[in-house]
Length: 141
Image (cartoon, rainbow, N blue to C red; front, side):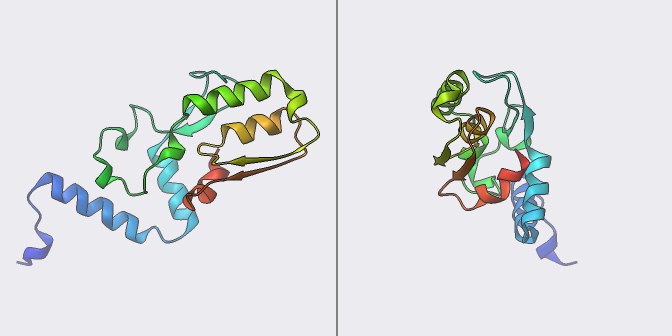
C-alpha cells in the first residue's frame, strides 16, 4: 500500500485536495471556472441593486474555510466593501461625474465602481488592482 496516498485526517485531506486543484489551475480559464464554481452572483443586497457581482457569500464553500485553505490569495475582490458600495452609488446617482469621461478605478476590488462608471456613461473605463488574479476575474463580473 502506498502510504503517501492514504490521508486519514479529513482536514489534511481537504487541504491536499484544494492545493492539488490550485496546482492544476494553470490557465486563466481554469481559474475563472474555479471562481464561478465557488462564488455566488449577488444582486439587490447592497446599495447598488442594479449591479450584479460574483462574490463570496455564506452559501459559498470558502466562506467558512480557514484562509490558509483558500486556493487564491486573500479574496478581497470577492467582497463588496462598504466604501466601494458608497462610491458606486454616488456614481450612479450623479452620472455627470463620469459621463463622457475616461475613468480609472484604482484598487478596483470587485469592480463595482468601474461598472457603475460605465453604466453612468463613461466612454472608457480601466479597472486596476494590485492583485494580478483580478485581471482574470474581471470578465466574470
